[in-house]
Image 1 (cartoon, rainbow, N blue to C red):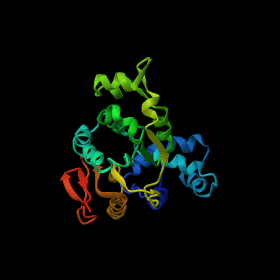
Image 2 (image 1 turned 90 degrees about the vertical axis):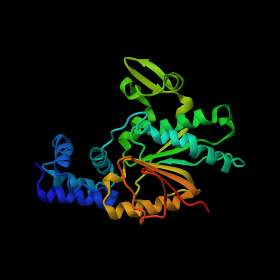
Image 3 (image 1 turned 180 degrees about the vertical axis):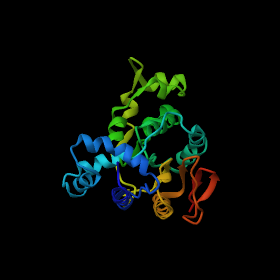
Length: 270
């Protein structure tokens, strides 16, 4: 069982390096790490943390992040966002970028890939036959290498796809049998998956038209969240959109976003 001292050490490490606030989640931290620590031959949580902090390869640090970040998602989650994205945001981008044909979208909490693939399907549906003239590739990042590996593989069980329109399921997925479906290559190549820590400086050369940062800020304390929201605001094109989770909130004092809907925000047009 994790001691108070060990828990404080782990939660401080996660907060310092990844901005993730685990201060009220002692039972979860214990439950997710205990088996790994016993199986790895460490005597206790402190021994494991010594390995995390001293190992030059960073393998155990990655393992710690993979074990402590929650990833629950499915296709069509909070679909009202995708309706708005297709009906309002994409027509704005298409008009704005008609000369350059360059669409810049970032999904900052890619998890196991359902959300970025969902965005890619909406893009395909919107641009249709015209898509070959546009650069519609989107960037999808996550802190966890474990979930990114699943996302890149693009294999999902039937229950994950049950809310998808049948035409999309048929067009974008290959039935592998045994209740498993794989994302077809034409959709896979539209998503660029990368490991990225949201606490680091954003590396974008160009500003984004739309940023999806859904259901990730719930893991941050208020100060970290404020700093992240400012970075996101600065990374957006004038008029660009931010989507957050429908249960999340955003303080207008953090950045001067215009509220479109409770979980949809827009940067003022220049």
